[in-house]
Image (cartoon, rainbow over all chains, first blue to last red; front, side, top):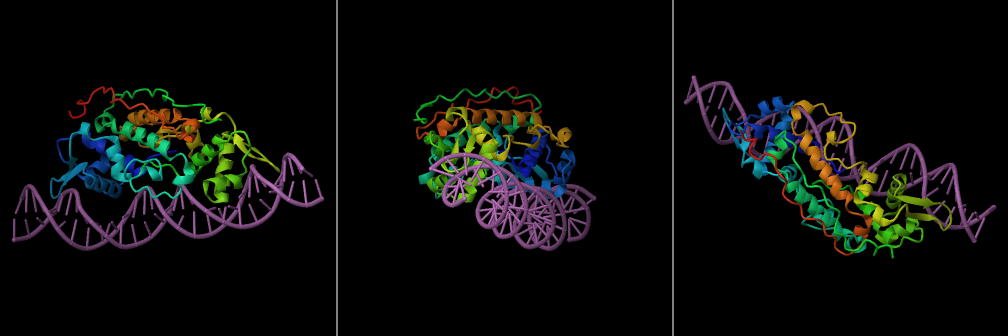
Length: 154
Length: 154
DNA sequence: TAATTGAGTACCATTTTAGTCCTGTATAAA
DNA sequence: TTTATACAGGACTAAAATGGTACTCAATTA
């Protein structure tokens, strides 16, 4: 499925909501109402986004959350990473790389390239795109410039 | 993280192993040994791949598993779909589309476009690519042809 | 008919995810 | 200075997905 977690989904919706009204700070309760999600859950999500540096928070009366930088400088990859950690399709695509099977695996290298391409794709989508109702145009993926298609079935 | 499940990872490794020796049928035990994974787990994975139509199985002595079609006609998206279901980043990217929040969500359309781009990317990577040690060249993602970057912060 | 090998199903343990609650602390306005 | 507002942080629980195992049945071949 390769699906986003539900919290990540919430995060995107909430971020988009804030992005549409970037001036005023938004209280957690207000956002929860606007997007029709339970308050505590939205609150939790907001905290994660602050910790990741995508939002800044202001305590006290009239406080709330605001974008840490302009919406066009926040990417889908940023939002996903804030909730789920860095975008990486396989264990070994991550920094640690403590996979024991590297020897017998045989697919690690190319998976990592795919993983990188996905990350690049997600980095090219900004919060501005997501928040805007206007359809974004993603480049149609050209077929891979294959190095050797038939070499395998030898 | 947007990570593949471990079983999907196994599936890719096993498929690659078979792809490298596509003539003879491979018994589950043999494959488990080759990729250094527990036999029952590999077996479970193989069954899912058969059910998805990526492998064909032959029972009895000298039986085993073979590719249902040439490796270059099997994509990464196929393998992921075989284990995890169709590639879709959000609930609403799926066929059912029974998300209750479509009204307040506001990001559904563009998420679906992103989801589609990811699927296209994964469909452009074949089992031949994965099985081959030669690096594949994925096209570098061009920046999105943005429709309106500033329209949001109004 | 015996040995081999996959098919199907059921089950359990673990981990992850989601959601809630409570207490503390900073801020602004009265 | 007091009070109401609103975020911070952590603990906790419930539910679901995941991963792994075991057991029995069916098919094929030698």
